[in-house]
Length: 131
Image (tube, rainbow, N blue to C red; front, side, top):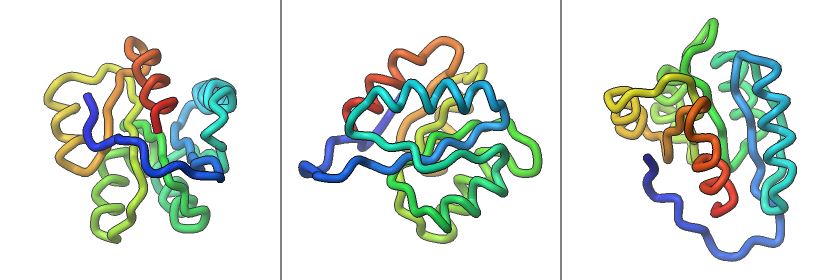
């Protein structure tokens, strides 16, 4: 489910989080949920992978929540671009209908964790609280 998410040294500033998902309702819900975690600060939202990459380059978040199936550019393409560019942010996949092959592919592509947004939201929130 996840890898290498150990809590870094104590920070005085909250971790900056970017939400990338094509569904506005999901982005709103995630922003509200993440706002309840004091160590995190949502700094932006993007509705597709291309805009998400632009936001990552501009805002330099420490954590990105990323959907896989989006218009223009999907999540796996975003992961590949981040790897090519050497970007060092934690990417946590939160997508619908994750199977084990997709989960493994995401982890191999550089995701820190992978969750099914329909069935593993509690686990996702636990990981976000542990960052």
